[in-house]
Image (cartoon, rainbow, N blue to C red; front, side, top):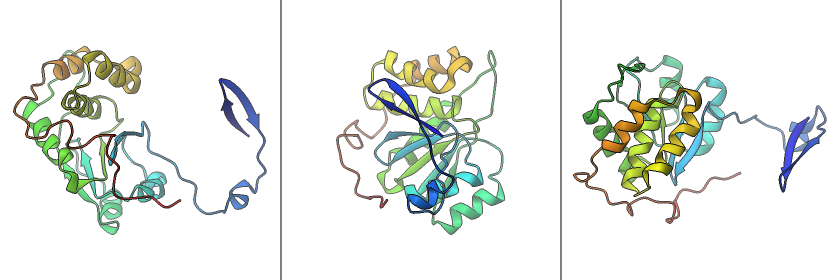
Length: 198
């Protein structure tokens, strides 16, 4: 049974056990934890488990930006290799307040990869898709000229009760003036060239 919403009302819709076959069968697409679209060709999530690989294949990714210092697991490396996905690793240590130190230079390096549309479609992820991923996405939003309150709202939507003042301070103080990309080089206003077949 699933829940569907129509104009604010939630309804239960019974499904038969054969519903997958009735809809054309095939695989069940399971997005990674905290998955969302950031912009055309840019996605974010928590760490992708093998159950999410079919979903990620449907995105036709060219690149993954991995924000953790730990080695990428073999199963994830094999998935990336077999799908022609380049993995860029920017190891940012996992820290808890008050000892959070987001390295400015590492974020700048990750932004250079992220803003290069040759790497799109791209998935940004860390372990849970909250703090490190949230900081990188927050810096993208600054480049897109979002106001700080909207940047913080988006960050808090993913971090929830674990939102960190230090992450928000980092995003607020992050200087975008010396980045080479203007906010119009990539945006929702442009159509992304790669289409996805359903």
